[in-house]
Amino acid sequence: MTAPRPSRRPGSGRPPHGPPVDSLTPHLFKPTAERPLRAKMRSLRSETRVMPHAHEWPQLTFSLNGVCRLSTESGTFIVPPSRAVWVPAGMAHSITVVEDADLHTLYLHASIAPPEPAWQRCVVIEVTELMRALVLSLDTCPDGTLMPAPLASRLLARERLAGPLLCDELQHAPQIRMGVPLPSSERADKRLRALCEAVLQQPDERSTLAQWAARFGASERTMARLFRHELGLSYQQWRQQATLAHALPLLARGLPVSRVALDCGYASESAFSAMFRTAMGRPPSHFSGRLRD
Image 1 (tube, rainbow, N blue to C red):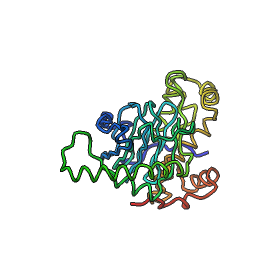
Image 2: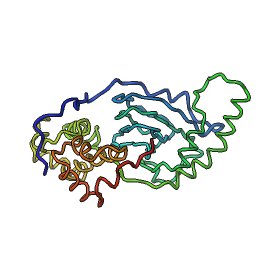
Image 3: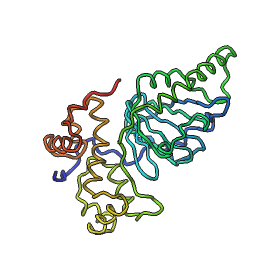
């Protein structure tokens, strides 16, 4: 097991939170029977936090560039540009921008949303080339935007044509296990929830479970039991999933393995690579540079 590093490297200590913003005005993009597919885009700076919110329609979120973290009551999902997260209707969610991002969101009316039970939870999918092109072709103007009638008519026609194809592409896109489970903030022990959130906010902090537990007023034995009972994982298993979720987007953006290892709190590249290969079946270098600019 990698020993904790004595101190953070200069310049690495990010604040756990950035400037909060509202829910990015979803009411101005509400999907309807007449316009069942709506798209919006907003550029957000690193460490920006979109406050928890919910709406009555499902959404698909991905970043054209940069990396985001979408969190719900049951888990958190790292979203690099080659991935997207599906959030079902009514599910509260928040977003933290890990790296400056152009955040794209699709809102779907119930009439075109996937009806299968599997889509009643968060799903991480691979963004195909066709899906990416279709999303970028859609109008992202909010309701009430004034524009010439011919342009408005053309954009609406494109939206109606793209909708069925995009929904078909969504349902057939490869799904990926790229989430980190979180305990329920209402039913679970608050100390466990606080510990999990602290680990996610400080990915380079490699304290032991005993050290983390002490920060939140619990014993190592108590926290170990809570991980097993609430999440069905040991702390080591959960911590590994959190590390992989943080590391994969960094590798995909082409960062050197040595830099990613340091970002994940490993004192050596070899220790990080050994963990990564054991968990993923491939070395970190296999995932390097997999994202488009």
